[in-house]
Image 1 (cartoon, rainbow, N blue to C red):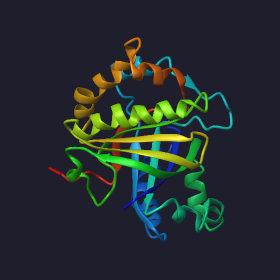
Image 2 (cartoon, rainbow, N blue to C red; image 1 turned 90 degrees about the vertical axis):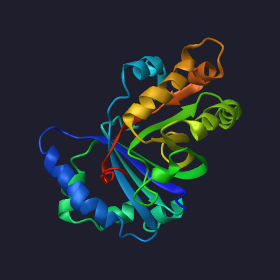
Image 3 (cartoon, helix red, strand yellow; image 1 turned 180 degrees about the vertical axis):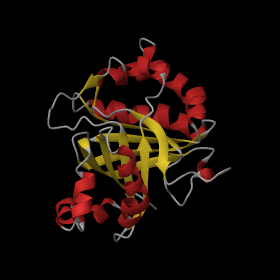
Image 4 (cartoon, one colour; image 1 turned 120 degrees about the horizontal axis):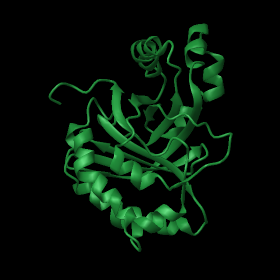
Length: 248
C-alpha cells in the first residue's frame, strides 16, 4: 500500500518547455522509480478547474509567506509505502548526487513548492478498479494543500471530511477515490487528493458538491472561512505521465 507521497508544484518558462517535459517523462521519472521504496511516479498539468469552480474558490484565503513557492502549473507526485522512503536518502542527499543534466533541467522549475505527506485515511470510489497502472493516481485529480486559522478548527475539519466530503467521494459516479494527507515537510499541514476517471466526471458530479460552499450556513461554507490555501491550491488537472491506457 502506498501511504507516503512527495509532492512538488512548480511553473516552467515557455522556452524549452517541450524539451523539459520529454526529459522528465522519458528519463527522469523512470529513473526516480529505481530508488529504494518508491512505488510510483506521476506528472500532472494544471487545467484550472473550470469557471464554476473558480467562483467557488475565488475568495479563499491564501498564504502570504514569500518563502512558500507560488508555482502551480505542474505537479509531480511520487508514491512510496511510507514517507520513510523519502528520507533515506533525503532531498539534500539526492541533490548532491545529481548529474549536471539533472541540475540544469530541474533548475528550470520556477516557484517550486514541495511537501512530503503521510496518508491519514482514504476512501475508494466506484471506479477504484480503474486506477492504473499499479497504484498510480487516476487520470484526473484535484489536490488541495492548506492550513487552518485556529487550532480548534482541525476538529471541525476532520468531522467535515469524515461525515460529509469523503462519504460523497465513496459513491460519486466517475470517482476513483480520495486520500487525506498530513504533511511532515511543507508549509501546508493538511492536504487532500481527489482522483477522478475524467474531467467530465469531475465537472458533472463533483463541482456541484463544491458549490455547497456558496450556501450560507452550510458546513462547507464554514470550512471555506477558516482554511488558508497554499498558492498552488487547489490544483486541478490531467495526468500527463504515465499515459492512461486507451480504453482503461
